[in-house]
Image (tube, rainbow, N blue to C red; front, side, top):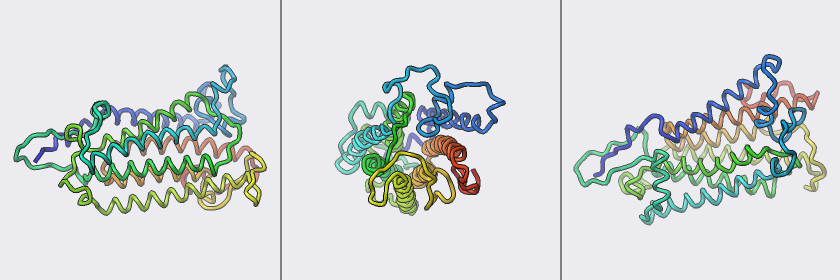
Length: 332
């Protein structure tokens, strides 16, 4: 039996370092937004880079950047992120399925990339050495389920971009657009890198994937479905604000949303996004440090977007509900 050689992985492999850096950057950015503007030096470029869509209103314009569509893609181009995710992460899922169920090895370039990013590795040696399993570790099945969740999440969001959401002509900056494209490539590689490898093949403990099923896989699946359903409902509520009773778009103005989680927070779609990623952490068995760093990044990035959105609503609507928080019910 092959020994586990990745149990004592570096606490800060390239992927963990990257997600920790991103989480820290968004935490610092969020904290800076909480500081009174009078105490900070004017930095229009910084504000321009962190804002998009409606949160641009009343804020800095383009900080000297050329005002053209190349510099500022439309906000509706969010669909490009999910197209990339559905195609790329669908390919990664196909590679994983081929390896898990048909024994097909990963392509050389993909295997090399995963090794660079810090994938777990078994050494293929015929020795009578006891297998040491990571605490709570059913890594092959967990990663498979999380990659399925990620692909389904991207597919649903793509559907919403095309058939549910009503976008105005608001824009995002080119840095945010490029980051979004890279993000969905990176997040899939992060999931796949959690699969233990035996050479270019996935190592399945016990050689039976279904034998790895645990209670937290079921809990993670239920949380994923629950969070996804609420996010979908919130997006429907937002889109209906711009439609008449017949479902025809009549304007692209902003209105106060009500219903579902909107009764508690200004951006429940961002809160649901966080819950979706937490459901994936649960599916990993609670113990996956790399994925908890991803969750930490998602928390601070969504909290920042929610805070800016909340401030927009408060400044635009005098009658905006006073009890409603930005991101976390009753707290923030």
